[in-house]
Amino acid sequence: MHRTHALNYVSVTEYYSRCYWGATLMRQEIALKKLVEYVARKASALAQRYELEDLVAPSIASLFEKTIDKMVITLVRRNGGMRCNLCDKGPFTKRGMYLHLIRVHAKDIEFMVQEELRKLLEVIRK
Ligand SMILES: [Zn+2]
Image (cartoon, rainbow, N blue to C red; front, side):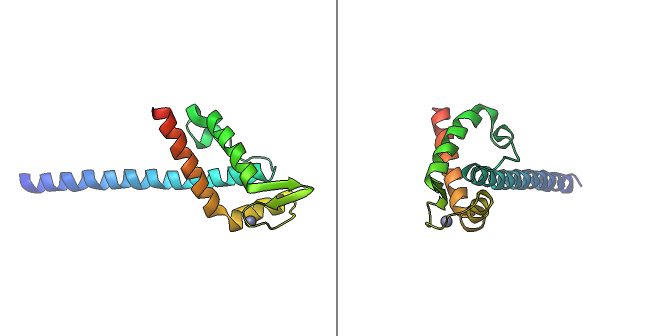
């Protein structure tokens, strides 16, 4: 009886820890998608739907904003209209630029965001 109880206890704890990590991963997943959108909107000069402070820790928000400004320069070239720096398509309108980045380059932007966040967190932890 006691033994069964102990086993149940372990499995319940494990269950909750799995739920917890699952939820954490899902939150990170959602935050990453919103960050990709944030970068794409900034690159296309569209108004933001989220505050950066709501997407990353407030302590790194202002540093990350500067990083995003650099990303924007690597993503979009402005001469007359906007052109994609990654595949040279364009010229686009603001909306067209945003849709192009989200549809064609979401994974590229996601990778950049993750890399830059990792670098930034390394610098802060030192
Ligand atoms: Zn492109």
